[in-house]
Image (cartoon, rainbow over all chains, first blue to last red; front, side):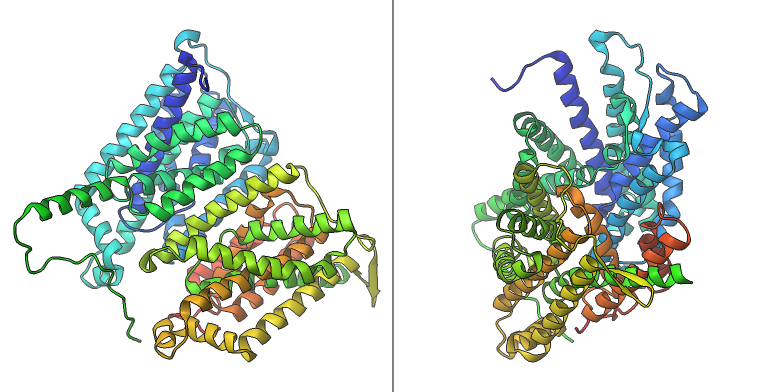
Length: 321
Length: 292
């Protein structure tokens, strides 16, 4: 039997599933709605983690439930701090944007190494273990994370129906035309980015308190970035439930792989295999594929085909230049 | 002044190796709009392979290139056919980033299983010797790494300029549709082009293994630098990548000696931010698909 179903073990899995659901859902606001692939979100996750750890060690806010109270501040602070960064990154498009955000990951990791007086460098920072009762120790962290997930889902839902959402979708479809029609593209992109990374930072803060010891490679982990992106792609980019569905499929799979293969580094290979399968066979995600299938079925049930039916044949794009 | 010149020399030597690495990336992007995040991992793979050949057979890393380069070329063609060709054209740039990132993870995992995660380095007989030129030290290993990189770069440029494949590659970079209309089989050319770009990883890896200690996770550090370099050079521009690599090699080395070694890896990012604010298309980037 591969699993030992202890309560603590289950809560741990729930915690990480909910955390990734929150991260994926937040990432989706940038990657899914505006179509800009940010690979730097893990940097802000790390900043959130360090923000909580540093306030602990340098401000002395005390243990217990106290660190949860600084989370909204961390979210707002990181969101605001990301504005100039986002402004620079958004001067580029598509692939270049992705690259610039990747470098962000390494900048923040290097900062965590080098700013020794704040972060203790590679030694890492520890947070005191709170005196929650052992039987329900994980619960406060879990509920806090659930709160961030709710906030992310709510933000996704609200943005989707709002003016900002319309602007983001217009950018995704054709940024130049959107701009030509008077959409304030920079404002839309930067504000969605700030919202998204603020949520990610809050998740990072809870994670740091839960893990209670962080160091640079651990807190700013490229695997975290790639995890959120993969979950969004699996579930369905741009949908509200897709990223959450993706997390609920992939996190248990990931934890299972780590459990079975964790001793060797083979779990990286397994993870990469899952990743490749999703990207090559399901690049549009589960939810959009299902809704396509449903639409197809409905269309087939109709007796006659309408004239303007869209064919399934791919149309070769011819660039005029 | 002496220190400064020494730093510039060191920077140029490192920059030459970066130039070879980055040219592979730039080529892949130019031909196929593919950002190959796995290039770093492939370079580390090259480093491990040449390390193994040296440890077990005693083959000098630079002589081993005769074997390694064709092998990496083949690997590149296979990777392109299996993982990159199936991607839909409209989303190739974004999806390729993620797919090659997954490949990088896979390679990292396999290398960790095969070699464990301890740091290795290919220690040749000339590892700690150096030439002295007009009072300046040039480490023999770094010198060889630089020379090998430049030779390979020249070879790459020669292939692009003088052969039929090179002409087809350049045509595909400039305008894939027109190239197809003129009878270029862009699919085959893409596979071969990707093979070429991965082949550069063999020499780059051998050179890297001699100059720096490495472990399977080293590819992250490498790829972050390389990606910065090709953005600086202007995506898809080979000449730009080479120039940016030399520039960054020197800038980092001078920063390390003149200001602070701890913060020297920030040079890349500082320059990147400064360039993006002024010229988002990179130093040598064209506004449209660039020509090599």
